[in-house]
Structures are given as C-alpha cells and as structure tokens.
Image (cartoon, rainbow, N blue to C red; front, side):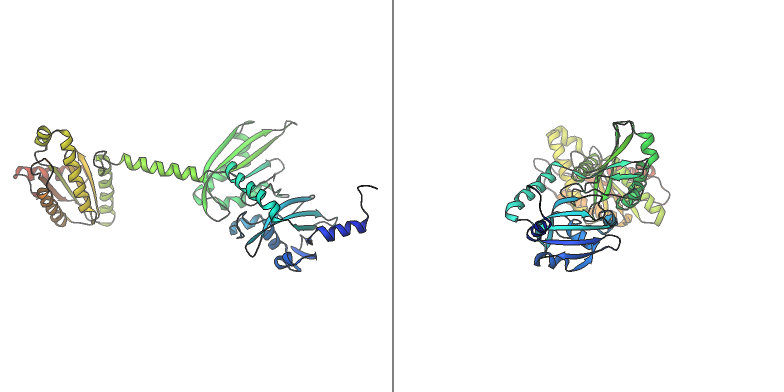
Length: 429
C-alpha cells in the first residue's frame, strides 16, 4: 500500500537515516547504545549515565558547552521524563565544537524506558537558521522562563528556559510546591522571604483577581551562576471551564536595573554636592560629622574640625563682579580639595564663602598644621584679575559626647577669633 512500509524497509531507513540509537532506563538513570557512529560514540560511548547524556544534549548554554550552575542541576530529574513522543533540534558540543542534530524520543511500553534517536544535520544547511533564531531570541525575548501553574492539583508545566533551549521544554511530574522550594535557592538571600511570600498558594489565590497581575523585582542566579536582576510576574487566568490557572514569568531586567541603580547613585551624589564647586554641600557635611561623632563614641576614633572663610570676599564681588567671585570660590575649593586628597578628610562648602573640613583619625594639632599649609598656599596663589586672596581658619578637636551643633558652634567661634586677630591666620579653639 502506497505510503506504508514493510518492517525490513523501515529498518533499512533507520539504518540509513539515523546516526545513533539509545535505550534509556530512567529508573536506573542509564542508557545503552543500540546503534552509533564515530561522532556520537566519542560523546556517549557504549553506555553511561542518563543525566550526563541530558547535560550533553540539552542542559547547557546555546553558545557554549559549559554546564549550567550547579544549583540548577536539581531540575535535571524533571528533564528526563517524557509522556509522549518528543522531537526537537538541538545544538550539542563535541570537543567544544557545535554539532546540530535532530533528537527524537519515543516512550517505551515498559514504564520508565525510552528510545532516543539522534541524527546529525548538515551544518551548511541549518546553522545559519539556527544562529538567526538565537539572535532573534536574544533580541525579542527577555523572559528566562514561563510556567503555567495549577494550584489545586499542585502542578506546573510548559516551562520554557530560553537560555537552555531554543524551544519549550515540558517538565512533566514537577509539583509547584517542589519547584518553589527548589527555585528559592536561586533567589538572592535578602530577597528569599519576599519570593516565598509572593509564590505562596494562598497569597496567589487571595491577592490576584482574574486577568490581573502582580510583580516583584529581585536578584536571581542565572544559569551561569551569577545573580542578575529579574522581574517575577504572576497572573491569574480564567479558563473556558471557569476554573483558574496562574502564569508565572521571569523577565530579565538586569541591564535596565543596573542603569537605574547607576542613575540613582548619580542623582544621590549630585544631591550631596555643591553645584558651583562640586565638593560636599552643607547637608552632606552635617551628615558626615554625625557619622564621625558616632565613630568617636563607639571606638574612640579621633575627629577634628576646621572652618574657614575667604577674607573680604564681599569686596571681591563688589569690585570684580559675581562671576569673579564664583571663580575665586571654585579655585580655592579645588586647591584645598586636591591638597586634602592624601588625608582621611571630608571637605564641603558650608555656605557662601565658608568651608568646613572634617578630619578623621587626625587630632587638632595635626589639622592645625594642615590648615596652616593651606593658608600659605592660598595667600601665595595668583588669582587672575584679583589682588591677593587670604583665608581665616578655625580648628577644634571634637570631644566625646559633643553634639554636631556644639562642635560647629565652637569651630565657628575659633574662625571668627582668627578674623578678629587680623585675618589670614589659623586659630585652634
């Protein structure tokens, strides 16, 4: 009859078209070769471990032969069960070189046994399409995997791991409760309690309306063993029979999140900086002194404080204009900031032409010496279109139990004493 084959004809086709045949005993986690060729013999030999075969066939990255992270190996036991015929194109690696093959799996009538047929495909014909698909996958899909969950029966299926395979891999026999307690180990420790809360069956039942979704952002280990930022998305869907199922998706948002974190750091840094000089502003200096006082209280780390302002600065603005005044402030702050870079200090603009130096692990005598050097440098500097500029410095050693307000009041008095003493000097209070 046309279109049908005699047994001997089928055997001839198999002998001609199929490169390798293996019988799998899933219960014993073993495989035995029925037919092979030199290529697949180098990889699998005559017999071996079924889990190791799966790693070589599908449990690796699309673009390299390395194993996925060890923690994900817990899911190997759910990759090795098949309820029906399963056929897919695979990229496996032989001596780190990619080989494209067609793999077909047939369940045997005997429970727990399968027959795997593998045929090498012509790279010249197929590799271009394969690589194109990988490229499209990387561009068009940011989902690491998606999963349907039946909470009533505690079942999850249709899991697609895009980093592992180019098409969906059905996990049969995997309970949602089992998956949940396995995958929590891939979540960053600080985010694990949040993950368990949002994946709790009762939470999903009680907090999700039909066709509504909720999501959380957290860090999750990828297949390479590195933590990346992901968005966990949960959605409740009403089916045709009025029952409900839940869809769970993991979306890769790492690049976007890292850019956001970077931007937030920039904005945070900007909020701590004086816009004219780029050094710390009034609020940040007060905050740093609070930290320094806490260290002094906790472990006795020495803290000293200096305040200085520009002598006769009003004359500079009145005579040369505010643009020149800004130039003087920027020049002095830059000079001081550069000199202090070798010391454990925080330097900021207190307001107007006043500046503050917080010195950690430096006593008042050493800070007085530092300020004297700064006073000399400033007075010797040649400012464009401006006569000599000088500064008056006040220095104190902060005492245990002193508040930041008390410390600032004392250093302010020391600075004004320097101005009363004729300016262009350093006074230790």
